[in-house]
Length: 421
Image 1: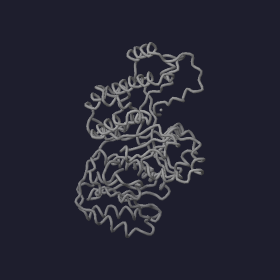
Image 2: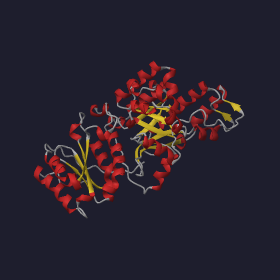
Image 3: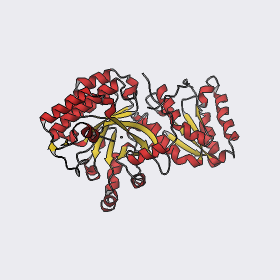
Image 4: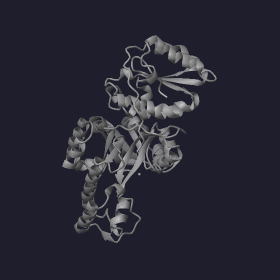
């Protein structure tokens, strides 16, 4: 329930009264509650209606569980009153919400959303007067109409070692590749598309989905078309195959063959694909608002095979509004990556149990994490709770993998905000 949509004609004093009256009507008193104040008015880029509604949708379920409420103030700031028992879940929701305006200059140099100057949390048991004073400062309302919620709609491109323990008889050759491409052109490609969510997880809180990664499972593709072929035996032919897959995925998404997935997703791309007519056609058919919700993921090995081409592709994509993620970073390579110099929005680090050994042995490991900025790091291939526990201890809040999917599947089915054309 979003109260601002029901009170758009209220004056400043009346709006303040609505917030304050709600405080004193809370069951068991407001001393059992926190208030989160989100300074939307401090953003340099004006928050779009669609983004603001996404913020409300992000917090709505958690707030309702504790009989809390969400308010929009006259200066466009957002107030969220919630029970103390939901603190970890609210933090996870906050990370998801802040992702909506990740590119705002106010956040460009901030590695911690909670200390970005855009968020303030009050313990209403001891700080209710401070909270009320802040709310009373709101003015110059810019009310938005409530938008309807839409129904919502597996991991990154499989690495070369995924079939290392499988004994395959034949190597990939140009002739076999040609046969595969012909078969791909004739099949229902939507059946090959998989998804796996990137989520914010803090402590024991439920995962909050940030976006879905869209990809083609190479193992499934091989099993369906050429089960006796090692697709990774020739790296150059494999790369050519992945370029073909890129274009088929783009075409499928452009026709909405994937189940009408139109926003909040990521795509694995070869750098060369960005310069193709297929990508330009995909881009041309997008609503500009959608681009800011789409993440393009590039493999580290592809980036450094031609760094100049990557910089050109990245610059073009970011100019068009897409976010950029560097994928395929193993823990031993972390110290050599400079996210800021590469000007990527996110980086994806592959989880491995050796994390703990490296943390103990490398006294500068935390420095690498700090340099790369925790809020922009995704820990992927997370298959067990230990990965989340260690990630949280490092301040990492974004995760992807089979364990996260199991957590999501265990939750009641929820409506997830989705932008429409």
